[in-house]
Length: 310
Ligand SMILES: NC(=O)c1ccc[n+]([C@@H]2O[C@H](COP(=O)([O-])OP(=O)(O)OC[C@H]3O[C@@H](n4cnc5c(N)ncnc54)[C@H](OP(=O)(O)O)[C@@H]3O)[C@@H](O)[C@H]2O)c1
Image (cartoon, rainbow, N blue to C red):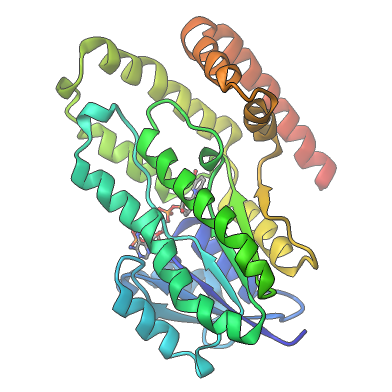
């Protein structure tokens, strides 16, 4: 297989930046990376990380996932409009009690996380169908499989992503196009910082005292602990994304953090849906000691897995 052109969205920071750089630095030089971002003024971090690959195996272009004309312009600017691999990564987060979030903000989130994907796929799919080749890689989340307290709207947007891809994958297969969902658990990026910053300014008086207390005193401290204990680096996710892109038969779903597999497995183990809901309820409201202890065990397992890989 010759050099593949990979278009990555949301490369100003985090996972998108790490994927673009990892692919551009591929030792076997298998990729030409079109690293896109909605605001090219933010290219500094990517340029530094890309180093010598800049303008060689990596080029930076403007693309706003919420703007059809910007997507079209970007794809039109590529020789023969060819995109061999699309990495749809651009996304945003949202946490907090539902009553404190505006429907407008929820729509903006869906506009990026879900409709952004739809716009990108609509643009590249016809060409991929014509060439009977291509790979659509989508940054989903474990929250695309299992919902989580106070992540109602974010999880819903990733569920939408998963339903869309699951439905499309069969048609894509008919045209020899591969589809893969990457499902990270927590990853330490700007994402986490941005959602916590928003929470600082959130007016919790929009909800009842009990909900505000649960969010502030239980959810937020736990969530921070989870990120600091179990969070992966964007580079780990990028490495696994590269392996998925080069695989002969890439999986449709790939969880990047094996510690999260039991969490999503509960859902498949009980078709009534009670098991994960009861388990989360007990974990959050009845067994915070158990939660802390299991976090400790998971942290230890993660260290061991890291060592055995090294
Ligand atoms: N971090 C996690 O814990 C985690 C876990 C699971 C899944 N994910 C998923 O991973 C993806 C990347 O997130 P991240 O953690 O790397 O966060 P991040 O550092 O905040 O990066 C998000 C990227 O998306 C871009 N973006 C947002 N709206 C856009 C739009 N309309 N058009 C183009 N780009 C846009 C951002 O650009 P600006 O700089 O211009 O805002 C930024 O480059 C997201 O889809 C997220 O849902 C993250």
